[in-house]
Length: 101
Image (cartoon, rainbow, N blue to C red):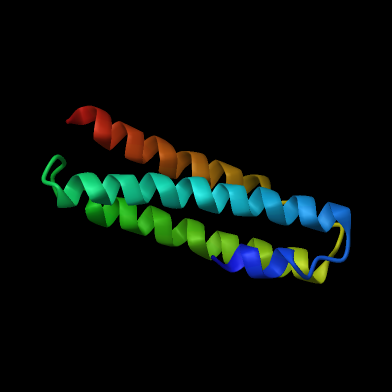
């Protein structure tokens, strides 16, 4: 997890809080996707939606990396609201797929 390494080198409280927010978003998304993949591997969910979930997760990870870059370069930067929206979209997708089965 990229966030953990960066939090140690934070120079301001605001920067640390922003990185903690980004880290929380990444952690919850990773947990949801890991749980989804576990259900797929166990045969409880079909593999039909794996590409969709994988694309959404990859997109979120790219957004996390971008947000981390911005925060590292600007100690007053906030976590982008789009990152939270993208995370919620991913969590809703996983919940919707799990709810169908």
